[in-house]
Length: 244
Image (cartoon, one colour):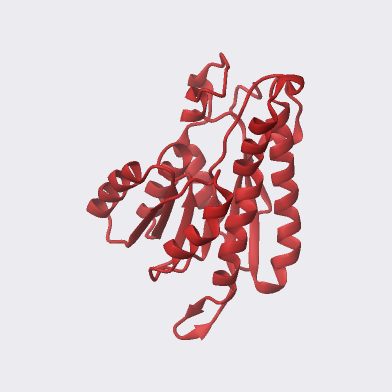
């Protein structure tokens, strides 16, 4: 079975993606801060599907823990052919008032940790074997936001971090093409996730008209099921109500 590594897998889009990919027959490597939440999710999925699931608690805001954390998770026998970088964070407020430590925290989660996870997984993808033969290749999907291409008051730092992630994805695609590794982004409008409940985000948007986590998960599966001879460089999914 193919294996997918999903970051931020304990809730929101990550948990919905774990359920959707499990139903499609993928083995799972699930990563999040909360081991307890991952254990509950893994138990649910093991009861419903004949797949293998490995989990690991890892705080992606801790840059020094990422390489060893990924190596430990992937050292249990599952080699991911698909990586979904889903974890991220937001902070709302004027750029002029944003504390430097919050800026650094958000860029660590939204950009630098993605770079670190990719660096840890790339050698495994390049060295993948199938039926005893080196086959290499794989797919990396970076979950991004339409904020990468727009400017929203009080969301400036978030917009900048997502623009950086978009550029990282494009550059990585160019560099890894010769290794058979494809890169896609799923660019999302507002999604009804626990992000809106976090203490660093203040908004009054109508969450009822947002994209659901299940819709986002289904879009991830669409990207993952493209044949290896083609790649959807970016899939943009917006609420019918538009940007808000």
